[in-house]
Each structure stands twice: as C-alpha cells, then as structure tokens.
Image (cartoon, rainbow, N blue to C red; front, top):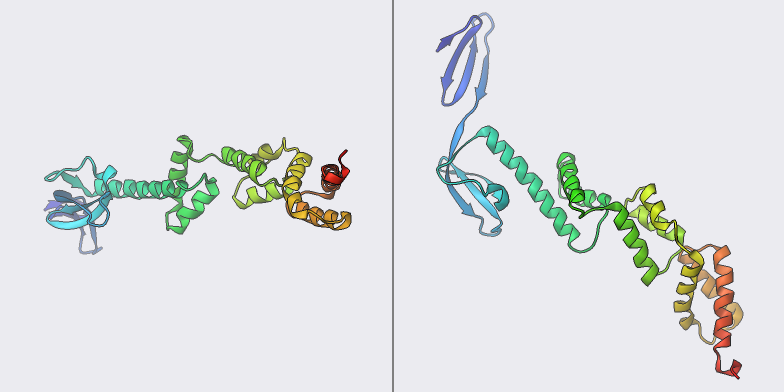
Length: 246
C-alpha cells in the first residue's frame, strides 16, 4: 500500500485501486491486465474465424486475417484485445461488403444501406467505404456510367428515366449529370422503337402511333422526341412491306 496526500493506492490482481480518505470515501478502480493465450481453435461452422481462449477460458472470436499474428502462450493486454476486436469488426464489415459487391457493381449508398442492415456502425462503414474506394471496388462515377451504357445497349431509356434510376441508387447530381450529358435521346428512342415495332405488325397507323408513343413515354422519352421517331419508324415499316416494293 502506497500512501498519498489524498488517499491510498493498492495493487490487487492487476488492478490499481485508489481509496479516498475517510473524509471523502470512495473507490477508483483502474485495471490494466495482461492475459495469456491458452488456445486458438478454428470455429466448427466457419473455418475463416478463430476462437481465442485466454487464461484457460473462451474469450472471443476473430477473423483469421486479424488473428494471424497470435500464438499460444503469448500475452496480450486489455488494450490490445480492444484493438483486435475493432479490427475484427472492420474486417467482418469489409467481407460483408465484398460479398454484396460479388453480384454486381454497387453505389456507395447501396453498400452503406447493406452494412446498416447488418448493424454495422457508421464509423466502421466510413472506414470500409474508404478502403473500397481506394481499391477501386466502389466508384459512383464508374457505376453511373456503366449503368447508362448498359441501358443504352439493352434497354434504351430517355434521360428522364435514367436520371430517376440513378437517383434511386443513391448517386449524387454531379455523377448523374456526367453520365447522361452526352446521351442522344432521339437515337435511343429510335433503338427502343425498332425493338418494339415487331410487336405492332398488322396495326393501322392510329393504333401503331398510340401504342408505340405510350411505350416510349413509359421509357422516359418526351413527346418532342417521340413524335418524329414514331413517324420515322412507321415510314420505314411501310417501305419494307412486300406490297410496297417494286
């Protein structure tokens, strides 16, 4: 026991106890303990995680990459344990994000939403997103550009519809504007109309115009684009009819 002008300190089982004097009774406990690793065991149902045993008892689990430097009979402090568990939480969140990205490219907002659904803290999400961005696995500008290019090739849509879709994926205005700024809406409407035209064989002009116009309207094109495209496709369709050929 070490005397002090305000009280007494005592070391008990690795904890420093500060006992105030009789005039101001109270107890402050400061624990800083070292633990011995007594076993490292693969988890039965998840071999990518290691069960850590300290001082003979199970303590916690860690991912293999975080636990790689640990060894039996090694001693670690409470502070180091807290650091390991923080690293493990970050690594688990990162692996969850990679799994989510495995199916298709994702925006930052989609990754954030997925991690929040798995109860990951905002602090760890920020760290994971920074890591994904630095490695090029998440890039909102690339996501927006690829989304637009895919739509142009397989499912042509008007600029209005594309902007709405990109906003639904959490893209900001700058990324969206860059992705759609060079779009030729009339050409896209024409591509979409050509594909749809096959379903309108044997239709008269009025029915053809109504159905094709409504189709293009649902695809996000405006009437200024739709009207000339519908007339162009109708004329090409009529010119290709056997009865109109020489």
